[in-house]
Image (tube, rainbow, N blue to C red):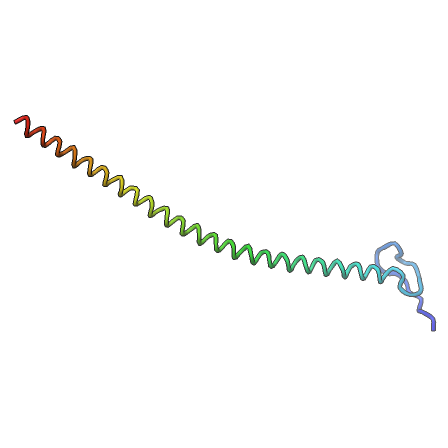
Amino acid sequence: MKSPLRTVRYDGLTKGKSFFRCLYWPHLVMEKETRICELEYELDMMKDKVKRLKANKEKLVEEVEEMGIATTETMFELKENNNDKRLMLTLVFSWAFYTLVLLMK
């Protein structure tokens, strides 16, 4: 049984040439299938990486929100602390002034 005579129809080195059997095709098909598999694997890896990064981003956003709340609370505490100090100093000075006024009379 003879192999049929075939003509190359794709753009390449052997376009338009006639040949028996598939001389270049198996190699090209295998190479292209390998490349497609590699690209599909890379795509899957990228999708997994995107999922991990999104989860990490959500976690970091929550942490930043918590830190913002804690920072605001700390600022209010510091302001209250400053107000307390000012009130105490005002009270001490008012007593000192009252004492001076009483001593002057």
